[in-house]
Image (cartoon, rainbow, N blue to C red; front, top):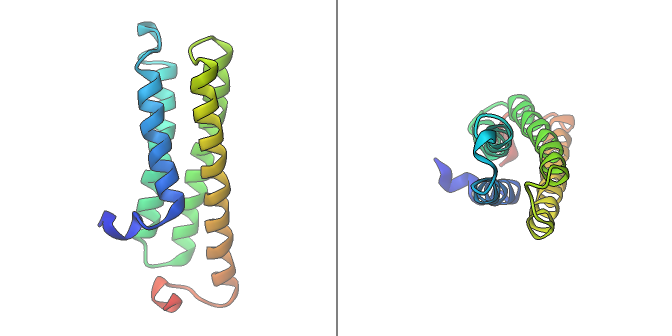
Length: 131
């Protein structure tokens, strides 16, 4: 199932971002395990998971909906990264890794959304119409 989605650049970046979020949140204060740590991890994992789920849909409109959910999770993660930095939970070095990766993932995901929407505007409704 993941073989096909692994070729999608937006998924690759989102997967890398989720892994980095798990790495950096290991060092967060113990009292944040059910707070910021959990929220950051959930939003980070939601991005590649929604890309996968959407890619498995036959209908392009459904695919786009899942991609928008992924984009929303990425926006949520952007705030959590900012908050963690302001609270001193992220070092400058960690922030310089996470934030550009999040930004690149967002741009790539937005490009995928635009491409899917262009295909729908051309009258294509299913993934089989793309062939």
